[in-house]
Image (tube, rainbow, N blue to C red):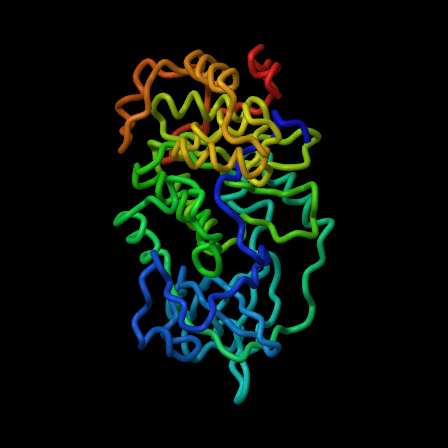
Length: 379
């Protein structure tokens, strides 16, 4: 796709980008705190809670990360229910819901259906997502066979992730530095959710969430990474967060741009949506890498390192830097200040965005807008 419809992926990808990327034996969970020993060793069911993250091992040794969606205790299911399915925890992996059944030797994951449906409230709240999701699922096939696990243990939770972001949001705010190793395992799986949580904690002003990767229906959809849908729902309920829907050229991708209802982030969010920026695509020009990286709040040195790694340039040219400076000044005269406050929205941009917190939603900006002349020159 053209550079104008791509975003900056400034966080390094893991060596194995599949959902089965694992933490090697003895590797610490780094920023995320280790779970209590009792929780890690707990049997299936009673000790699990919704929004727990499970690290599971399949029969062939593959590592999977899954999110607990519901448990009998949390859903209030009676112990003497006649429906066995209600007695089983429900987990999600790569967009599929599974009921967990414990046998004498293994754990079986029994496919139940898609994690998301076009008619669900979360999906309907974001314009364009129901239709895009329906088109995507028409190209996919639900697994039919049970998935056999050797083990599954709780390794983190939504509460632990939120606490880690509150303590030190750098991992989810600054982008990847030139000496940072690629993220793997639990850190990689929860990166997107942590970025949304850093916005909700006011540690950064703008994040992008890829809702649909329509240009390759066979790849795992990043929106199903553990806890991301949970964090996205929290963002929709935050009255100080605006959401702009960004459609890729040809309708092949859909991204939600979440930003502070304050300047300059609200104006930046509208601008990114105006040219169809996508969270899962890397911009193909130094101009857009620098522009998007700055709007996402990444460190300047990290953005320059990303440009060098992906474009072969030592740094953005002075002409590119000048063009980005000029265009960002036109988009908003406000300077970013963190932690942000919605009170700085006074006199903000005219662009509309989805409003959460039960307020009437404005139609997010989705149409293509005319790019600045300096941007067209540097594409």
